[in-house]
Structures are given as C-alpha cells and as structure tokens.
Length: 362
Image (cartoon, rainbow, N blue to C red; front, top):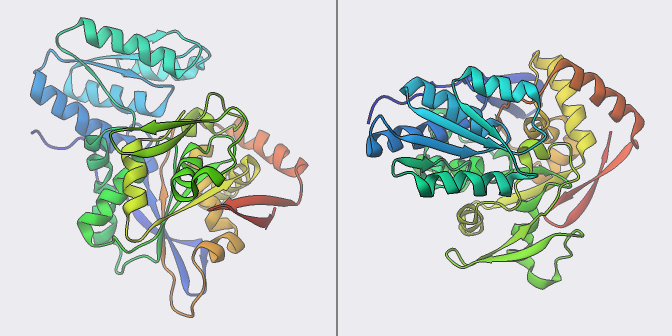
C-alpha cells in the first residue's frame, strides 16, 4: 500500500487545564487537512479501496459532514472519484467545502438513513463503486488507532485515563484498538456524549443493566446478531451536537469491544450547555475553535468535580489524555451564540455517569 495520507499530530501539555498532580495532555486532531481525526481511518479505508479496485474506483459515502470531508480529501489526494450523499438541510458552507475537494455532492433525503439508502443503490448498481463507512468498520478503527500509537511515543508515561467524544463510536473503536497495540488495555477510557444524542451511553447501559434501563422517549432497542449486543436506536435528536455526534445507533462491534475491555469504558452524558461552555473556554485558553462534538470531551477537563468523579484522586499523579478530535462545523458566530445560551441556563447542571447523576456547577 502507498504511504499513509495522514501526518502525526501534536500532543501538548495544557497549562490552563492542568492542576496539581493532574497534568492534562491534549492530542490535537484539529490539524489534519480535513480538520478532524477522521482523516486517519477513512483515508486508510480509501487507500485500501483503491489498492483493491484500482484507480477507477468510485468512492460513495453518506454523511452530513466530517466523514464526508475526510473521504473527499483522501479521494482528491489519490485522484479517485468521490460522491457524497447528504441529507436535506445541509448548510451551503458544507456543500461548498465538499465541492472544493472535488467531491460530487448529491443532496436528498430527510435524514441520514435515506441518504445512506441512496448511496447503497449506487454501489449496488456499479461494479467498481465502494461504500465508505463513516465509523462502522474495523479498517476505520485501525486507522484511528494510530493516534494512540503516536501518543504512547509522545507521552513519557501511561495516562491515568483517556477522554474522547462518542457519536457512532469509530473514534472509540480506534482508541480501544490502539490501547491494545501499546499495552494500555488497563487504562480507563471515558466516553462522553451530549444528552439527546447519547446512543452509545444507552447502548452500554442496556448491555450492562438490561431491562432495568429506562430509555428516553422514542428510543428503541435493536439486537445486533453478529456481535450479540443490544443497541439503543435514536429516531431523532434533541442535542445541538447531533450534527456530528448524532448517530442513530453506535457501531455494534465497538460496543462489544468496550464491554469486553479490561480497563473498561466509563460512559458520561452532559447537557449541551456544558459543551458550549467548554468550547468557549477552550477558544480563550488555547485560541482554537472546536465544534460541540469535540468540546464535549473537554467538559471533563474544565469541570474538576467531573474529572475527580471519573478519575478519583489517590495521592498519586493523574496524567490524562484528552483527544481533541476536531471537526469543521464551528464558527465565531457559534461562540457568540453559545455564550448567550450558557449565560441563560441554570447554575447547576446534571451530568450522568454510568447511570449516576452528578451535579455540576456551571
């Protein structure tokens, strides 16, 4: 296979976020050409598709954003055709961004499932067309795992915990695979989502606690036969972060990996307002704009009470690794809106950690 398309990303020690005996390290996945970690796994999948099908391969992906941009960037680098199926309502800026990478963009369908159905029809009809998965494929997880291999070289010691955001769980799958490669299977992973788009949180609860789990209205249970796991299926989303975190259901294979993992996966759901606040604070502290799907991870860095809950103090050092996963769906105007919404919300907000409510001060 040709040389990988992604480059190693920086890992920095964050002075603003670190506190006594708890240094915070940030893996900056924002610096990829497509502005997110998805460059890793999706470009690996695209490279292998070209190796298997030749230069005439037609890459087809259904996505509302970051996965599509990663596929388009990879396809442009390899000079292969890429078509993106995107649901109605996509911002014109998103369409322009994809077309700038030479992707053919087809808008249609009221939601992701309809866009995916249209994409699959094309793949079924064309001999050399390949569907590019946004998150639900082991090749994608393999590519994403490279960030943990890099981090293990960049850090001088094993972290006490790794923090990441979860949507469809492709990033989490990569982190789990990466931890296995570098001997970090015992390191806890803290997987954060926003309330209203937290399909992974509820899927893990279903498999750990079974029928005693109370699901939000409209959420149904799907049994994945291949992996023998229960999945929480969302038909709609109430979170503002759902544009990137709003997977109807997570990758079943990653749910299975998480359930079987020695170090475990701690599931946390936070209200949108805390993700908004974290995005604003991070822009002040590190002069970087990150979308809500990314800033959700950073809530645990900014809220000491949440950090202490998931990584209890023992007197020993607690170095932590935060995956700043990136994403292009953010603007200065968003930050202004977030500040207004955060100012208007309650001073005390509820976060859910593996079924337990934790009160967090705004």
